[in-house]
Image 1 (cartoon, helix red, strand yellow):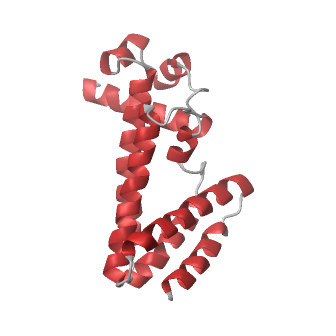
Image 2 (cartoon, one colour; image 1 turned 180 degrees about the vertical axis):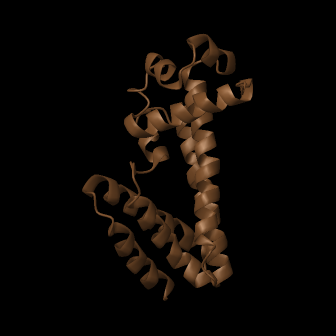
Length: 187
């Protein structure tokens, strides 16, 4: 007989929170729904998280770590720096076509907060800064003349492609962004 440990319970709560928030947003994810979907008591949730805001932030931090790790791993499969820069958009296209694609969790949740200092917005900002830093590394490896100028341009292409893919249901947004990146990077 397998016993569920406190670590497992915390992971279950975070998994369910992340899935529900990604699917329906923060406001639509109430504590009653979390309790029901996770199969845990409200007391169990509050044992690990002081409030819903703390829970949402923890779920987003975990998503950030997993998403960045997976994205970087997939992009880095390309053999050269130039191909890795183009592979950014191939990886995005695969994500866009995946079951349950709902856009960028960090853009989506930021849109639910009005305060730039809201902890959710700060997590989203940190996520985008990590992505920007990775893009800067790729630009440097490729020998881009001004990687600090090029990386933000690529970030706009990435976030634009994600938004178009979500709103328009157009997976080719990644192809269009890749085409623009080729021109920017002279590839």
